[in-house]
Every structure is written in structure tokens, then in C-alpha cells.
Length: 364
Image (tube, rainbow, N blue to C red; front, side, top):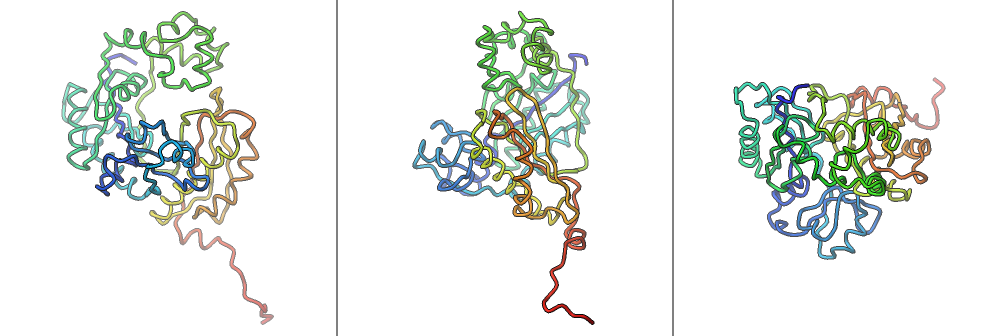
């Protein structure tokens, strides 16, 4: 695709934690952790910037987060509230373009190459969006602007929180050349270590390797590294109109190997999905576990039941067999996700659920 595309990546700043601080002013400017029970196996779903200064990050066990910051305030996630704000923000995006690709509740790509406002400047659109989001919700967002998705996403993280970074085509190669390899999208901790052993520390170092060499070293993801090092990313912004699934996904700050830690993350995701199902008064027939290992191999394991999944307990009952069909606990994992699909209404699910007869049985 031509470099004349105008892509914006909007990323809300500490979304869950910021909403909690917005709704509860007494929590502002305090280290805040949204997550599970710090006395149990809960994990950090999100944390405020004040908490991040203590080294706390998402997917960290809440018990460890409390050790790092004993004065932190812990609150349980309110997914219904986060979804409500997310819908308002996504609606704002669609006032600027029909080409909106949500990545999660708190970030999205927008292709504003052609837009209903006939605004030629993607930078001005990004600034307008950030201003409108703040005025409408009281929250801040960071934005990245460039000619492809890779650069726009990298740019949005350069000046957080409440920042805007623009990478035009004529500055892209210089920007990539000095970008630390650990900041590249798709490069996790394990891959970063391997690259550094190979003498790859920045984008400029990556340019020394041919496409074939990178594929041999890193598998099929090597082709992606080859192209992004040259500022090439032809992926389109793909709008999602009809919701066919509900899920929670976490790219882990550190690759996980310990099964108990993996389980804690997935259980937290199950509860987040269950909250959305309850809010919408729906269920789903299929439960899917997604795992991306440290070498970027991605697998899914699914279970389908006619009676449907409506609660966290429904999903947790099937979780052990899904995990047992993976290498969780034996192979390092960089991403975990839980989703449900084949959505169905409460009445539809009830009709298919087994009914317990009373004793004694009547013989007529």
C-alpha cells in the first residue's frame, strides 16, 4: 500500500485505573491497582502511573505488587463500567472515519486517509480526538500518527501519558534506525535477548540481516521483522461491525513458565469475560483459550457446549481440560487470552439446560 495512507493509533492512558480515579477522586495521585485479591492468586489487570513507578505492571501477581508497594490501593475490576466508557470513545472515533479497528476496550486504529470532515491533516484529527475524549469522558489518551499501523502504534507509546507523536514518511527510516529493539512491536523479552546476542540492538542492526536469515533465526515472524525494519507494513485497518465474540487478552510483560502464574492470569480473564456476559445478559456456546508461546507460535483450544457458558463457574469447569491440551507450564508463554463465541440469549440457553427432576419420580 502507498505511503500516503494516514493512520492514527489511539491508546487510552492507564484506562481501567484512570476510570477508577475519575469515579473516585480520593484515589487520584495514589498508587492504584485494578486486579484480584493480593492475598490470593489474583493478578494485576491494570495500574495507575503512580503504581508503575514502583515497577508494577499488568499480569503481575497482586501479592508481588503489594510487596513492591505496600501502600497501594487495590480495587476489583468493573468491566461493565469500562465497557460503557469504551463504547462512548469508539462512537467518537466513528464520527471521524468508518475505518476504525478496535484492538481492545482502550485502543484502536483509525484510517483517516479519506474522512467525512475532508480534513487533510491526520495530526489535526488526532489532536481533535484527544481533546474530544478529554472533554467527553474526563480521560486522557495518547496518539500516534504515521503511514502504517506498525509506526502509528509505536508512535502512540513514545510520549505517554497524554502525548502525541507523528512519524511522517520522510522521518520513518531515521526513527526506526535508532529505535531500541525491545520497543519493536512483536519483540518479546526472550526474542529481545536472542537478538542482542546476535548483535541486534536497534532497528539499524536489524537491517544487516536478509529476509531469509531472519526467517531461519526466528521462524515466520522473521519476515515481519524484515519488513518493519524498512518501515513497510501493508496491513489494512479492518473495522469490526458485528460483535461475534467477547474476550480478554493479555500480552505479558514477562514470559511466563510457572503454571500457577499462568492459571492466575487466565482465571482473571474468565472473570472479566463473565462480567461482560452478565452485563449483556447473554451467554455463549464456545469457550476458547488462546496461547502465544515465546517463539510467537500461537495456538487455540476450544470447547463447545449446547447449554452454553453464562457464568465464570461455567467457564472454569472447562478450563482445566483446555489448559491440559497445551504446553502451559512446560513452555514459556508471552500472551494469554480467553474468549467466548456463538453468542446466545439467556432464554435460548435455558431451553437447552438440563432440568433436575424432583424425587420421588412420578410414574404417572
